[in-house]
Length: 370
Length: 210
Image (cartoon, rainbow over all chains, first blue to last red; front, side, top):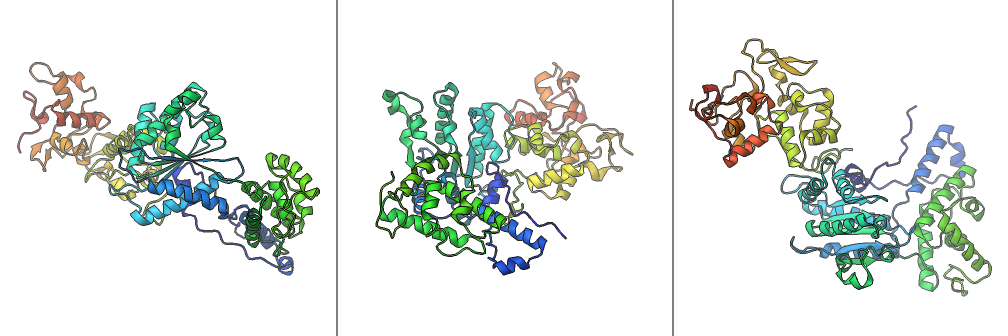
């Protein structure tokens, strides 16, 4: 008996092979939903394989194009696709600045994947000079990334040597970006750039240098970037006028689902209906999430998309493991979620209990969040 | 991990530098490294290959062949053809354990590589494999004898009579293309190394018509 493939795609987006794997990965195929009788009829091995395939599927339900995500991607497209300036002009950058758990990176990656594919379709996989065309590069900063480390990260992404001095690395990085015709560079976790530190000021200057010499659109992703003063490069309020990054960067928000009006509640309901269609549980049914768990899931996720998806994946795992084969409050109560969502949950749950809050579009008790 | 797009596999270095026809593998590695703004060692380290290009030009190990083919997209047979492997026992004798050249079976011992300075200048410092063979002594492209001493040394370190001092190129042309060849090609191009210096023996007199 041959071992079953685990179905997971273990790519690292900060390396070109991993990035390409993500870009070129075929859409996952939803496992067929078996009835309880069919589940019982499976051999022990087949049942383990089936459950494993469901676990992978539920953990990777794919990008759900929520209104928030579509609005963000529209903003990105506007910036990237109008950046067709000649090389002597600076290209405006985009900053996706939002709270954690909203799916910032997922939304940007989804846009970048489409952009990458479109560019290859439009211009071919090989540049005029015979190099590979790599329309998008992805970097993630860490807590102690410095100028040399950023250049190393660029070279590492392209699979190029990472030896040499800071200047040599910068030259190699610039050459690579130009050679492979990269036009979008994503720099994730930009909030790690602490501009109060001396070396971070150098880093901010280096980012300015990159935006000057690279004919690319930089897309920064971070949490509380504006509040940390990263855009103003750590300058005082009086000096902020000189902050070129701020002047050249358009901030794009990604908001949580808000259910304080009818439109918001209808969006929340549509999201839950979309998700429940994707679930592969024997006793799943229409309304399982959108009707029965609407308030509950909002309270637990506080409208944060990534928190919601984590909760759903874990709930499905528990529903399979316990044989419940459906999501209920009893099943979900045993699921842990991220700490921030759990903290916020307490206040929201009290509001629901007091009848002050609902996510249901049809009800007339459309109260505000307490 | 292979991509259906344009024959590009995921493991390939996205920046391409193809060998020139007839080029030796050590020269190509050097040139590729230069294209990537590093040195041969930097490039080979990034590919996880501890071996030296000086040894690779004798014969490639299976791992070196596989890694270089995957990283550059070149055919493994072409990589082998850029080494002296196929001349082993004919024009060269390769000590396979140490991957060095020993006394050839029927030819006068010849270390390192001869070269045509005009080719080096025109090809931007790219070295031909055949220059390493003892039976190759002339450039058929430029109709001149090959040189086997360092022109860079002649230009910078020759004494008044133009005779090359042994110290000018410590390993003679055995240095091959390890940076030195590239420098030489460049210096030939900008006039800092001269073709056909006076007062040197016929073996070191490139440019002499044949």
